[in-house]
Length: 75
Image (cartoon, rainbow, N blue to C red; front, side):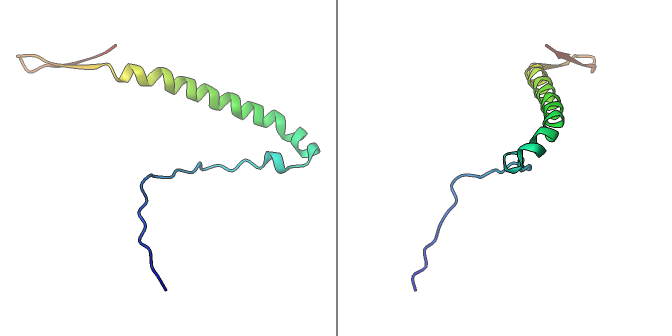
């Protein structure tokens, strides 16, 4: 028997959710649609907030003065 050494060269990431909506019956899909739409709207809102917050955090200025005071400025 021959053994082969392998190396993983790239991280593989999986989502923590499994969407089974497409496997549901049409009747159940109809009942689930309103809740799915509300959930998607909430997720979209969270993504939008995260996208607007991150760039401002990248422009954080920390100022040390001669007298020992410390100030922060976020642009």
